Image 1 (cartoon, one colour):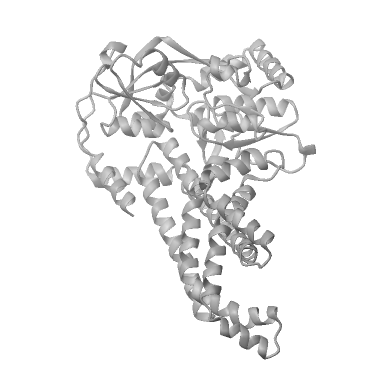
Image 2 (cartoon, helix red, strand yellow):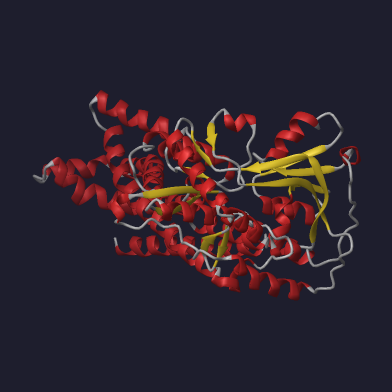
Length: 493
């Protein structure tokens, strides 16, 4: 809630007049200023290799929306990025502009393919050559890269796709990995994917009799996903450089974009009240193209993962508890080893290990991997909750049950377990809420949950705060739902 209140305050303050900005024309003019760039970008490589000793304060962000936000809020003076952001209407609504274009940084964009998969690389190249021979490739580029046209609806020729795989068609699916909304290469229109690079891959897949599946990852996870065979092709403004060429293969370049200094528009002065700013933010975050549906879809995914992982963790936790309390030393040490291993690995690391290593070639959906990961992690803590509850019961009750002729198993389930569960529920409730909040990281493995849906909205609208406020409220309500259900269960036991 503190973060939500902070975001609300920042939303209101964003309606104030613009601070004075400057428009640098050379790298030397950046000295003493704060410059931000996108992590993993070609601009980051240039900054670290050629500009690190020029007295410039560099700051990196994982998402272009955060770079824009830093620029608008005065946390950065310049966004060192690709000029393609000028093709986005939301970019202009934030009253940003591309200042000086840099002739020494030209980013050639291409599709990335797993190292050694020359057959796919050459096939995509042949398809692009066929488009170029008929002039169709140039038409695609001209249509999408028209800086004077920020209404992408008029650019759509091929019907946008939801990117979800469809059963049938002999299982021939082309899995395309992108890093979310990156106009004009990948954009959302009515919650379906299109854009320059998406259209090219749609045309390629159709020409080869394949269905196109689109998976979204953080930009830094695209190449690992490709190397782990989670996707077949990487798009999303992937610029060719030597470091990436050592890890993956590139197709021939299909577009090239210059880098530039992105700045706040020095001529803009805001006259909006905070109420007008809030209404505009609601409109572009939720109303336009029914973007609220992304949040509802993410809500059900979050609920599915949370409930399923809690059930799995409860069952597996019972097994681990039995192991740790077993009289046999081997079983007891096995249970303790599980606890030591799982509880000492960060949840994000465990999730990535299961997705990219353990189940890399198992073909399991990312949602299933997320349920397994959170179920395993939760089981380690739930098992200790069970153990503490069992040990809180007077040993005399077990002895009384045995004296009455009940077997050890009957004694446990008839006398010990009901009391232990009742005493454990308050602590179990806390674990359930922690599990729910922890699922917000599943976007790292291409699961569009509540948090990832808000990220997509933020990158599409450049409205940084309202989506965060909305999902904060939804998580609060979900936590209340979890605790209320467990309280109701406690009253019935």
